[in-house]
Length: 118
Length: 111
Image (cartoon, rainbow over all chains, first blue to last red):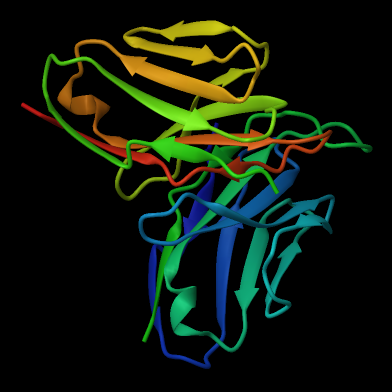
């Protein structure tokens, strides 16, 4: 069973640029969540995708957007990068089975992508 | 949004010592998770507690959920260098599993 993988592992961008981060969910998992973890902080929820649709969003501006593909892999796109976007971006997958309210499935995190904005 | 306070923020101890870290909220937790995050890795779930007063043990780790479900503690007995990491608590509210994380307790265990 392959765990959650993320690419790239590290990335350096300059202010104003755009970035795309990628995540492959664990086999059999149909739900992907993205988190931003700034240095010295806990992860902050960005959004979650279930069956290729956004299913919940945290307090992040619209320049943070995402996609989920039919194979349940996912992308996080950030436009107009700001210095404060420098952080570890974590992807987590879970095997959500309910079509209604989300259930308490365990989330499995990838190793993250460390983004530095200069 | 539920705010989770973790204490202490940093902890540096010698191998063999015992320690306790705490997670508190002004709101009632529907459930609470404890994670450990090692440098360069994502968080790994250690335990989920749901019932007030619940105690769960994972080898040398003991997790306790407060009776009022507003606080939780993690106690490590005879710490080892492999216990070094960031210990995070997380909780969700209502019927959603979109967790809110605390800032974590950074633990360093020296040989």
